[in-house]
Length: 102
Image 1 (cartoon, rainbow, N blue to C red):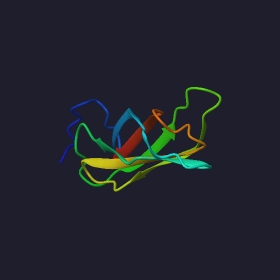
Image 2: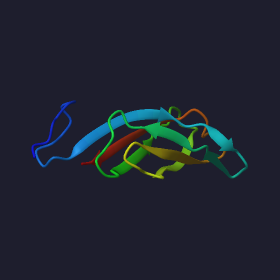
Image 3: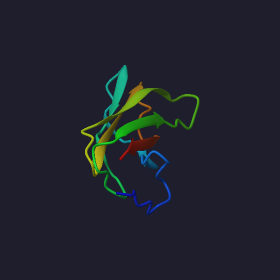
Image 4: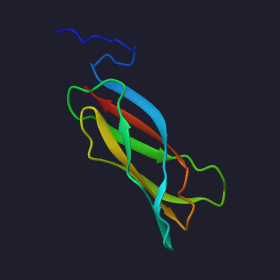
């Protein structure tokens, strides 16, 4: 059947894209790393199957050294985002994410 494009974010191949920003929070700040708490992100519209999720830290000052972020426990309705930083600079960093699926 035809794909219904409710939000206008389905491409010609039928892939569905959602994106937003979530704020990370620290759960551990022991040197030399800080580890962000798992933040649950719920998709505005459920995917038919688990999508591919990509994330990127958006640091706000030059002193924030970010090692990366991950998307884990990805399902059709939500995923968990976790950040990793160097030092204690992981608190309150915005994380942009992009989910692509059917």
